[in-house]
Length: 481
Image 1 (tube, rainbow, N blue to C red):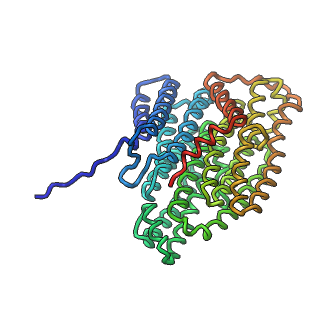
Image 2 (image 1 turned 120 degrees about the vertical axis):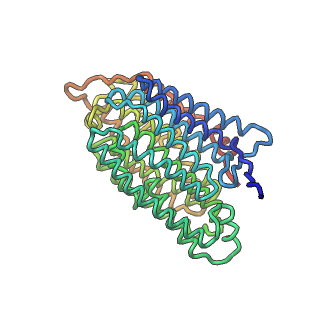
Image 3 (image 1 turned 45 degrees about the vertical axis):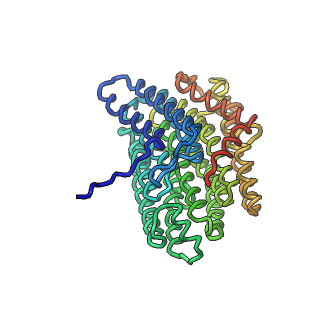
């Protein structure tokens, strides 16, 4: 009888991912015995930091094999995205420790779900096979569906979870159909194998149709037009601590997989998908910015702003070059700090049932809490793209990549959209500094954990803006191929 051969499994390549999953499982178990849920938050934070340290150490080991069974790879590209995911998770945990207790939602499952969602994001960034992409996508999505409906006593939160679940399932179906068609056309779900078949020069209309369907699934995850309709309702209805995390993490995960897929599997078909991505970018940034202009609720305004930023990121994807990839990497890291910071401030001012998120309720914040108004202004100026903050360099690199890829018209549209965005971002600053506080408005207290998150995010936005070179150098070492 022939013995079954078990191939060697290089689990060392998955060490950061395994640390996050293990921490999540530990939180689930300890949640049964620990009454103080904030301690679970600190435990989760320690796990996230250990995962980041492990990933950084891996890259410095000579002879380290980053591949796992030809379906995942822990290369510089995946490691950089893991830095984004883990930074997002760490800051979101700190924000949650200050927010959840204040609104009566401090539950241990929040931290476990956040860690499982983060593991799904990491799997997507490491994936070199469409099957692993789908596993990571569903791991992330299912956790986010539940997190959106975390407040079981709030109708908007329940509605957010249900809408996200239904639309997410619809998008996943498109993605799976796309995977099936791509497999039918190429005989493989491996990124490199797909590229080998398509580079042979044989026309593969079925593969391009498969790519089109997969783009629908990714467009939903990054909140690109016309698959963005869920975003304002879900971001506004979900607890702000959840919105803070998903507004960056899910978007970054979608772009991580999309860019690797396009640049590794479909480089020979760049001319076929470049215009489609460019048009998608124009529609996304324009609709997001125009809709944000009409909003009188800051949390909902930031939701539409998130759509617009997906459009800016698509400008880098449309470039179809390694310069475009590096510009997206840089922008996503910057976006993580400035967007999490902005939503964290919203969470501080928010009361139960979304009271405190109206634009008018920001009036006079500079007199009630000067520090909170100052950091919010920094985040909003950075989101607008004002120098010398990090958001300026992020947009500069994106738009330069488009110009160098002969997409000058797209860069011009993006610059115009940045001008439109200034109106609603600066509108919040005007309310905070130039409008008197409403009668009876109270001074908002900021808990220590949230203060740490805001300080870290604010310092990162300023430092990267003043000295972008170290991050640029780190990005240049994180490109695949």
